[in-house]
Amino acid sequence: MENKNSHLERSLGLIHATASNMATMVGIGPFITIPLIISAMGGPQAMIGWAVGAIIAISDGQVWAELSTSLPGEGGSYVYLREAYKRYFGKLAAFLFIWTFLLSGPLEIASGFVGMVQYASFIWPWLNETNIRILAFSVGVLTIILHYNRVKFVGAVTVFLWIVMLVTVAITIFVGLTHFHVRDAFTFTHGWFSFSWGFVSGLGSATLIAMYDLMGYYNICYLEEEVKRPEYVFPRAIILSVIGVTLIYAIMNISILSTMPWQEIAKSTHVASDMFSQTLGRHWAIILTILVIITAYGSTYSLMMSYSRLPFAAARDGFFFKWLGEIHPKKHFPHFSLLTIGIMTCIASLFNLDFIIAASLSSRILIQFLGQIVGLTLLRKNEPTRKRPFKMWLYPIPSIIAFIGFSFIFLSSGWEAIGVGIVWMIIGVIFYMKWNRRPETASA
Image (cartoon, rainbow, N blue to C red):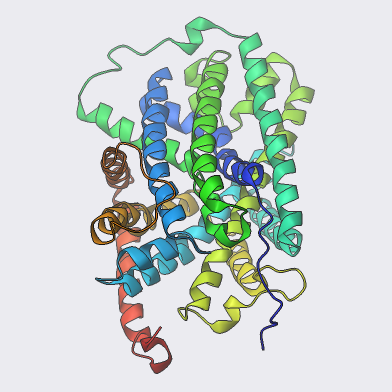
């Protein structure tokens, strides 16, 4: 029997929310994907990919801000999709989100664990694939243990990791700017800008990578019942984190590009460490690598906290097993849901990083991002009098930009990734049809 005193604590404020978002957004992403995005565009013009990604993120951030304040509830997208489509197929839409999340969520967290450990191979070159997978699994177990505390403690750790992230990025930018070479930073390849298929394809790949790095601006929306004054915090945390991280990425990219030829950057697997090694020597590069690892861990730490709330929210509404909806009687967090996501993440950490990233991206765009954009439009049409503490600026222009942007990214993800997303969703529909026939779920 559930303890009547069990409840979620509203102890997270604007600084915690912004810290959680920014720590998630930065993480290991830019430190391992800068070479990828430069390679995709073939030079410093890769900055266009970051710019396009930022426009999409800011536009979609307004979708999240309006939905999160007009449809409050622990679970984020689960709540938004369920309510937005309730006149049509709300139960199916909510179920499919949880279904796709069970694939994309743990894989996304696992990509941070694996990428973090791979970055550590700069310090310990003897690490092979087997060692990396075992270490990534172990980091996942450690994260579960650290999360088994009151959410206020978790929030404090998040702020600490956020500060480490800001220090790491600031040091990287400082070293880049103090060793700045204009020729390297702004030497574009001949004929770099043309409306050819190659340019469009490269821009699509670059934008996909940029959005992978920017993902997380919505992170705090999953913890609605643990945030003080969410109607005030959510819009500000989302917009501040998108603008802040976009500026950080822009300056960071230019700083790295200014210290090394882009051809070398495109081939690097430890670009920040390589930059420090060339400019300050290996000892400083090792220190920077340690900071990058801590920064990466901050991202995965925040993700596990927020993502563990999704099965919890679904279980409370009768979509999953009841035990996933239980709250720890003393520490006041959904402990069984946390354990479920944590264990699945540890298992996902044993796979190849390329597969992890591809699978996590391909399975979430159709239902979550495109589904929410359409859902917001339906809510505006069907419930015009609903209280909306935050309303999208210049509606519906941001929605249109976000929809086109995510569609472009999905089509640019490659046929294998597209296939994984579609097949997984079809399996989810079949599973839902069988699951929904059960008497105990028919009235959920």
